[in-house]
Image (cartoon, rainbow, N blue to C red):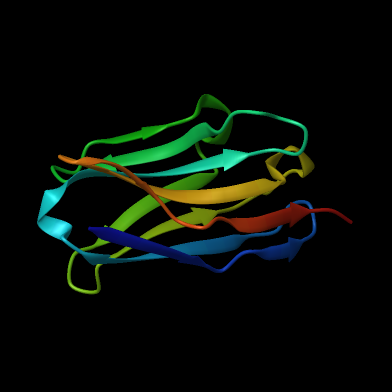
Length: 116
């Protein structure tokens, strides 16, 4: 099994920055890509914000391109999401995600609130 634990969320003013971190443990060799998703208030579905494969291919949601950066540290077994120039519409619960050969795994989620 794979376990994912997020940290680094909180309240920030518009234009500010936050760095989310996801600590990965368990059967890591089974993972073939990592991602960050978010679920905004009132939305039923989670949207993929950023994805990084174990081969290093990266994808971003159009609305966060140029502002967010996903990265992976293979020594510390962490996946980070650096978020800059935050906007109120970035307010959501952010989830760390891993695609494994035995299914999808999710962290518990962490709140990010962008407000003045």
